[in-house]
Image (tube, rainbow, N blue to C red; front, side):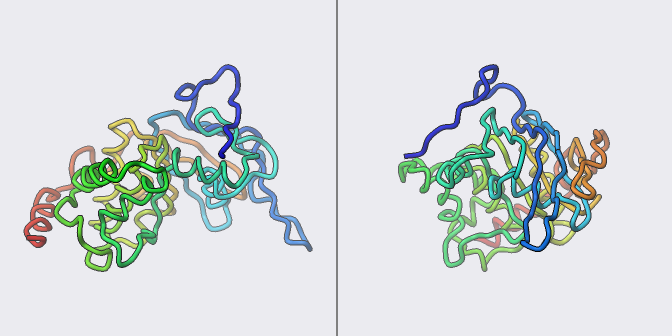
Length: 265
């Protein structure tokens, strides 16, 4: 049985900021020395924001990403996800919240080989015990949404890098999580595919999703509405971005999707 952590009395699920970090500290104890990974981070991300987190290697951005994704725990302080303090959750509770509250998108796609695109998208719903008919219907709808309805029976090795990442995004949306967390989602893609994926994130953001992207690329961060830069385990800057590479579909996107549909026939 998974227990539910209590939330602050003034907040209910669906109210307040989606993400809230209070005096959050992460210390790595190697035995010989202790390394301060994050230093008293105070940060909020409101519902519906599109945020990019940037920083060089060792800046703390990956540590923050792991904590936001409930893959690691803070040493001190509090992390509230959708109003619930997850800092001291049990492994079972963390697993449950990852499945229900967070949609992950990784640089290496992390699709299951020898498993169709449709089955990959179904997987989070299987863990959530969604009835088969409903999860098949939703998986098909999500693949249509990302432009891959005609390729739902293809295996990952039969898809391009950009197509595999679109399957990963569809999978991230499977359980309708309030947070989409993307770790270097364009790191293994060419320029055209990278723009395509970031435009898809912008569309999801416009539809109300909260999107947090970790990247080291300035041109990728430019798609976000807010850019938070980390250095030495601290927030170096937190700025709004009003100029984006494009607000509409990528030039030629319709042609790309039409060509893919024709190839699938």
